[in-house]
Image (cartoon, rainbow, N blue to C red; front, side, top):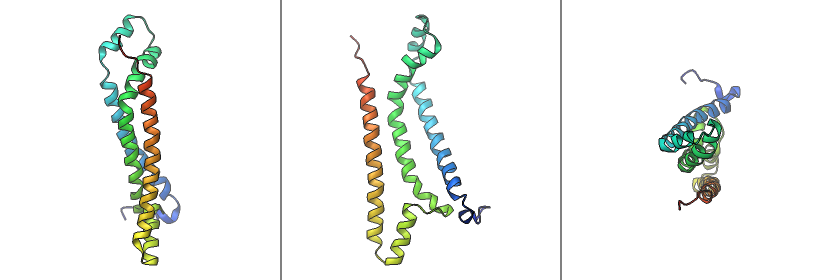
Amino acid sequence: AFGYAGVAESGYAFVIAVIAIGAISGAYSTEVVRGALGAIPNGHIEAARALGLPGARIFGRIIAPQMLRIAVPGINNVWQTTIKDTALVSVVGLQELMRISFIGANSTRHPFIFYLIAAVVYLAITLVSQAGFDGIERLLRLRTRKAV
């Protein structure tokens, strides 16, 4: 199986799954942050330099707050997609939620119940994650001051 025969039995399936999913979601998250940094107008940074602010303060007071407001929704999207992509780790033989549901459905001949439970678990995980990201977005909005 493409050089990975016996991976599930050797105990490295979890490590391989974490590396694969982590690398993919890390690449997407990097692009989200890069895009958010690119969306900050250069005039803001030039104005901070003209005021004589040091580099760390420019990042902490000007770049980071604007970047976070832009990047958090995209990172939320990457996180939700990563949660849903964990179902793909059964390809390397790892026992995850959908694989266990499949085994349970085949052993009892009641697939609807097992897949419904799996769907409810995924829904609960994504709802809790979404509530957390909504709280973060609300916090970032509260810290925004209106121009006078």
